Length: 190
Image 1 (cartoon, rainbow, N blue to C red):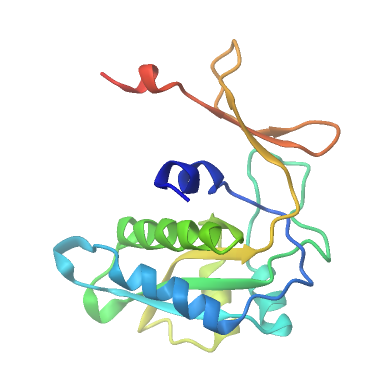
Image 2: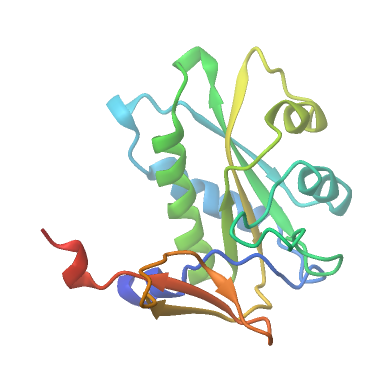
């Protein structure tokens, strides 16, 4: 797959085949990709908590907010929830405010997921203290930066041009197809 194909297929998937489990080995391979990603000042402040066990996945799921642009949608239903997560943490001994580093690492993992036939979603709407407690992690040592939800996608996500009103808000049609408006390349070049 070319980089353009990977980038095009790497969408924010929010519905998965929950029965198609993702192994810890696969998560370790994705974390290895994130480990190689650049960090500001090469500080390498990120730590990663893979989650694959169904019970722990349920605990992580309970701390997440899904799809702010779809206020009537409470998130994936039972059976369509992520099969695994990577919780991206900042080791506070290395500083704080590392969300840009975390985003680079998360996108790197998501590209690797697509290469493996998986999909995912980078989530920043997280009840962080509750998640740290669920994982048994010390809040004096770690801060939750992002959560990467992963699994085998079961939704159709399509890119489209911006509508006449210029809105970038994503939406779903009556059949559940998820549309993501994107600006054209010419609109982005200044």
